Length: 115
Image (cartoon, rainbow, N blue to C red; front, side, top):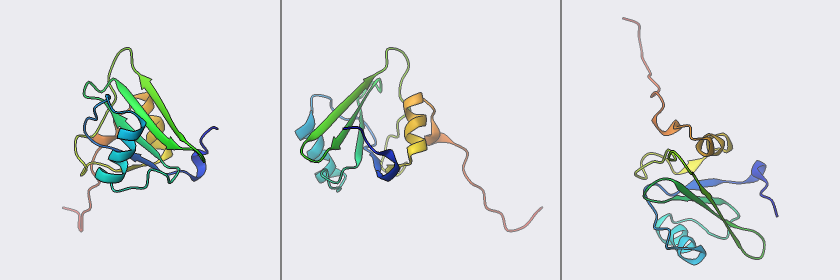
């Protein structure tokens, strides 16, 4: 089944994840470290130490799906700690897969007066 991105939530696990872990290990990370429900139908994204491989874990009605993308050149932009980001929008997922580093965008400035 294909993922319906209109009604789905997308979560990212900051920092590196050991890619010796497969479905069960990643589902445990979702539940124990991220404190989220691995069976919710959400997408959960993980990245390896070299940042050239990305895995996406997803529960589809009666079983888990595990997708992987390996970059032959370049690296994925990826946050190092949980303070940077936890949930992504569909637009941010698209940018991430395209290699756009939205994690380090300009900060919003709020001023009370001019001068």
